[in-house]
Length: 331
Image 1 (cartoon, rainbow, N blue to C red):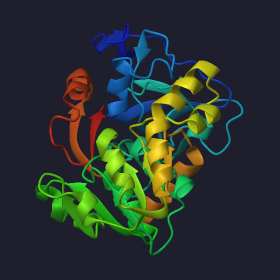
Image 2 (image 1 turned 180 degrees about the vertical axis):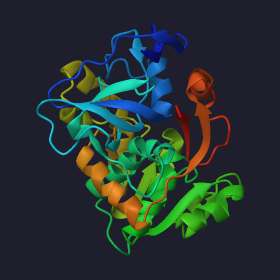
Image 3 (image 1 turned 30 degrees about the vertical axis):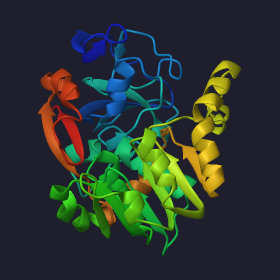
């Protein structure tokens, strides 16, 4: 079977012959129709998460998939050969840049019926990130004010739509060229990050979703009302995250130190900071599929690449100004 692998951290992504997936009793064997590209793939390739996610190499990359079920394990319920599914395979079972992949049934859901396989493959990681930030952590309610940074990106385009569906007033940061596009997705306020200071323009927000980290995250705290919630997906990770992830004492101490400054600044402002490293969840994907089929959320695919161009596509990620997601297709 052909797959795109890295032989070691920081090595190039290349095509290789790899063994066929092993099917466990709770697994679905899926023929990959399309695979979404994510910055997480590049971060894992260069070793940014090797202390958190200890992958063995050679490693097949890829976190998003949509495709056709070929075979199911003996204990699988709710899926059958021929089903079209989408998934974000759990950590340590990634590998969607391949012809086939075995996925635990708990990580998968039937793909939305109103979209094609390419659009379905664009959704899992970014839609789960938006859902876990806005629903699980922030518990966004109608009438609340939500700031979503990098609105034209993969997470941003979905988060804007989800926040609007939840009844929120939505602000976002983006370039002026994307303003009308983001208003069409549901943004009430679009801040041009090149010419406007969002921290001066916005105040008394209930939730902010930050995908940039650093100074941007710190300044985001200032737009929140007392009791507000800041969710960061670019870090720094917190002790609470380390505990929930079951990390060892050394990493817990390191994460406590890394996040001490932002947690102290949040506390001084009367707000709360949460770090989110999204997790696989087929139940949440079923809810997301229902939102897509109802018209509440629509995928945004900015560019597609053929399977054989996967290394070049990953290398170009983040440098093309693409709206929404880039997706690898095998059709």
